[in-house]
Length: 636
Image 1 (cartoon, rainbow, N blue to C red):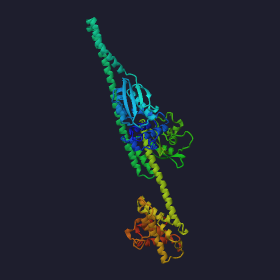
Image 2 (image 1 turned 90 degrees about the vertical axis):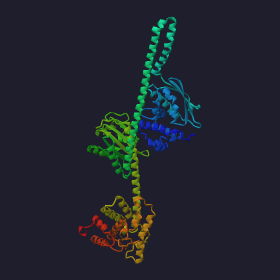
Image 3 (image 1 turned 135 degrees about the horizontal axis):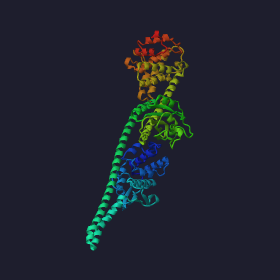
Image 4 (image 1 turned 180 degrees about the vertical axis):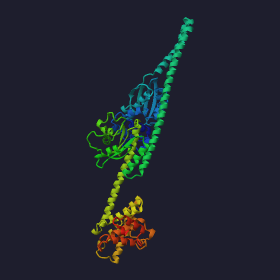
């Protein structure tokens, strides 16, 4: 039974709102992840959780917050104005705590199916609540504490003093149920109502008794006095009751307005988070991500300035990487300031936020702060900051940097809602930065692998060492002259590095032969183009790299059809292969080979231009000549 869904996600919503309100240093996403609960499940109002999931979540939250009474605190928070939740809405719909407790069963049914609730009203200011678990349910003390906190909130929400809660029976002590006796001080309205009821009896009894002894006194004095007393008390009781109802309606209206405002803020924040996520989703480098974030922050957020500091690779210091609204003087100051991430206590606000993974909201930087040494704010004061929010940028529980925004001119106070928004955005930025770091790491590994593969071929012969690198350099120069896209240039780069990989199957005796090759030997050499295509085709190239095998394998094709391996002509040859063909040809004739000396550059350029009439694409030859830093004007 404990494995069955018993608790609504609304309980988790209460806990998470409390965390954001009181424990901003705790990352809700990380908290849920540790409890093995997905964020979309916790946000789904129709999702239900098991007792084990709630217990695990409670234990982790109690450990992270250091508050062993977190469950009772959450119970009180459930009906607090800050929560703006459905429990507060339900409670404020009643005229008194007693009526709210009588309808507790209906309220709790939307929170849990684990227990049944029965309420017995003992007096106008005293009720007994009996909680019985469903069959097979094992209660935790955290559940009991949560209920006590909520009972306290139900009473105090009616502007009454904290109630007294007796707990004679408890499931955690081995009893069959949890029984609570809740009592609170009687309100002035209830006292006057009792006096009015007594006066009503007196208004009837006193004239009747007096009539026996003195009818005239009964009619002229006692009856009018009794009626006046009853009417007066009734008037006072009605006014007090109207005041209570008016106050309840006022609270209910305010709660509704708060909820609408909160929904509006959440909607706007969700739009902003979505906009930032969309803006950085296509960015693959940290620089592009930070530039996009800074631009969106400046356009959409109501802050004067902002900056992003990221830790270096060794986690020894924070470095300024992006910002908005910063005057030149402040930007220079930030760039030239060291923010060392030493393990010793203290430091500026940025390093403290990074090391402790803790957020700060300070509305007056000029005043001393309880949770920060005074010198930690000195840097902010130098920049003219008046109020600041500083959040660690986290991913998978690890700090990557710091996001900070501040006010220098605006008089709008920073709020918890601002801090919650910035903390959420910092997490989005953290995920994007980590993805960019992983992508950069994979790219470095990919490139190192390519260079090693290319070097294995070139290294077979000292005379051809560096051939693939040089061909790649020429090919990229041609690509830039032609104005090709970055993606296509990248594909050509990879194809150029690997264009001769098929030579791995050509014997050294042929590759290193000092004289001219025989017809048979030349035919063997020619097979390297097809082998390059066959070998590279076995590699799982994806995306922009899919054409690498085709382009690399066709670099010996010629536009007149006299090339190999397929004898392609004109437009049948991929433009990338045409580019590599020109680069490969020029590098080969201008470099030392076993069977000949390198051609002088002036001769090499002339030979290349001659080949352009039949073997190479004239536009590509012209692009190479325009790019080449070796070309003399008289040869162009």
